[in-house]
Image (cartoon, rainbow, N blue to C red; front, side):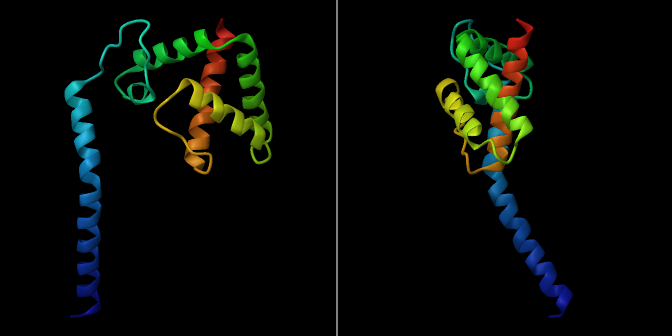
Length: 138
């Protein structure tokens, strides 16, 4: 078998592995499409899984509103200061990042986020930035 035959075999093997890994994700996406956006009665807790459903801008707005209502003025100020610190000093604002993760764990139960994950840090920072933006509208 020539070089191209070996490459085709490796590509097919890799393709099969990727398809196998994608199956659970496809099943979850199918379930979300079938169920659509679930309406959550006012006052009930929302989790970030519902928040992240792409069809649910209303759900996202409701989650943000609920969190803004729950935050004390001191918490709003501290979160704002942390977000601004991270914006100014993204590589040296470790304490600010730890603090917004603590708020994440206090107000958002799922999905869990890890400080060691770059994408998680960006997502948590962006989320609290949106919360602060909403607070400033009040």
